[in-house]
Image (cartoon, rainbow, N blue to C red; front, side):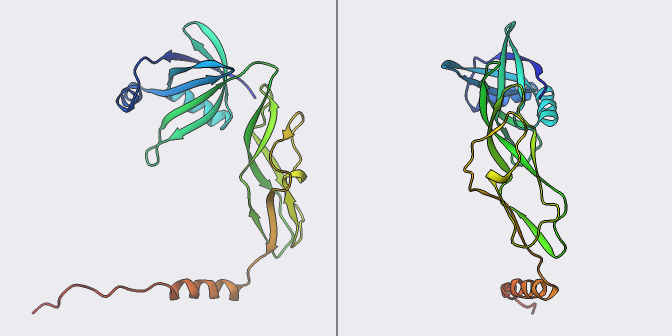
Length: 207
């Protein structure tokens, strides 16, 4: 995974009002912590950081320029606004070259199972441990040709070289079940429709 370089400013104001002012200035409030250091309150350039997350994914590795001093950091938490398309806050973890970190990596299902089957993906991410210089962007799980009843657990998932599973090996990742028949789908629709009760209108008839 490539490293992105970003200039970060130190924040001296805190609280909701200060955070809003930071965002109005085109920056994202962030906190950098880890390795026994005191938390640092930072402001990151919004467009630049959003581009890094888009290109690298949820576990973006950054080289922060803080007052002329470089600091390697891992993106741990990105909080986005529930409605509007912008990032509200970021948590960053201090990391060092050569160390391993535990991260949640996106699981992507590929391939086509046997005819008459339906795939249910039970987990969207898996926790793995990897070197900070080689954090996988995603983990692919193939369901090619799998029959009804097949299951893929965390221990069955092939991991990229250098990555080790941290999640429970027994966690169910993918389940292969029979596709519902047309009659079953119609019965489901009918049952859902039967559960809808129309409220009587409170409007009074015109005199």
